[in-house]
Amino acid sequence: CEDNMHIFMDQQGLELAVQVVRQRQHDCDLISLVWGCLFLLLLKSPDASLREKLIEMSTIEVLLESLKTQYKSQKFCEKAFELILRFSIGGAVRISMSQGVPLLLLGMKEHPKNERVIAAACGSIWNLAMHDCCRAILMEHHVVA
Image (tube, rainbow, N blue to C red; front, side, top):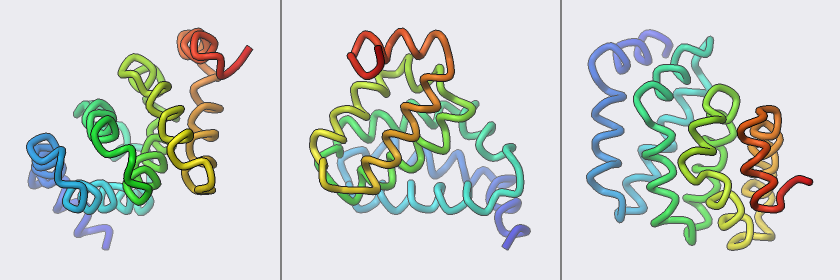
């Protein structure tokens, strides 16, 4: 499994996956599948190198663009928020700069009874609050005082 992951990464699999999402933002099933696969890769990744590579590739911004069009889909929101939680550790500043906080709040308002959405959003907000520049944005949206 680890060998397959490295083959996928070494042969532009990540770049192709992100390109597909960029081109097909309104195809909820397809982009949910792609983001789900990237999430599984992140779970299987033995270290932070995959997350760092995805952050370098501006994947956070692409994910947030997907979320802007698909936030009403509960299934998509679950996957997106779990990915944002994973990215919030190394990419907090990029999440904040790319309108991530309002999108987290929007998803929480849209799916208030979905425990996975709420838990991932709260975890992301917690990670964002650890950074001074992110804390200011959280205060601006009245998330923290």
